[in-house]
Length: 195
Picture 1 (cartoon, rainbow, N blue to C red):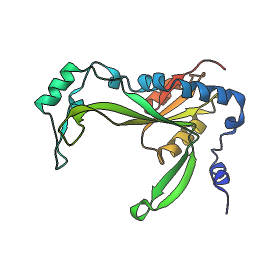
Picture 2: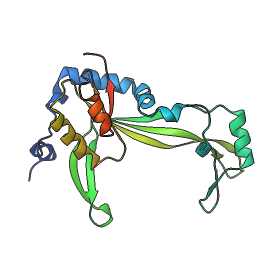
Picture 3: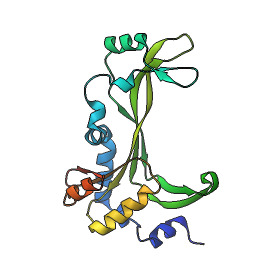
Picture 4: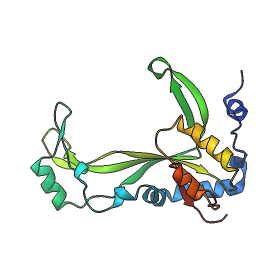
């Protein structure tokens, strides 16, 4: 039986760039600029103050309503900026299938995954205290390219990643030749400094 690394390589998507210094420099740049990348990819989450969906009250039955105290709290307190709360380097991507998603198949390794959170106003304890909690925001998968492959190779890799990742896909590279085509495919592009 082939090792997991060999299985991915057999699919034709083993990323030889990972062991090269320019790839490392871009990956570190992206890691250190996670908040900037989040803001560039999801600008709507950073606009204005509290949004209508941010001010909620959770009922015991799981229902969500907007209460007058929550509205008042939002008016009196500035909305914190959404944030990246977790950064994963080279996480394994797996596709799940079968009964209760028990079957797993390796689809690749992401260069980076950022997990984000957005603020909401809600009841935060049993005493009916209104406050700010953090809910999961969009997840971002970053594919780092110091040298851009062919468009076909890039898209095959990203389409495979989509089978194991439910979030936003982002290519980070100093080479922006495919930026407009990627945008048409609902893949974000971030231009990084030359390495």
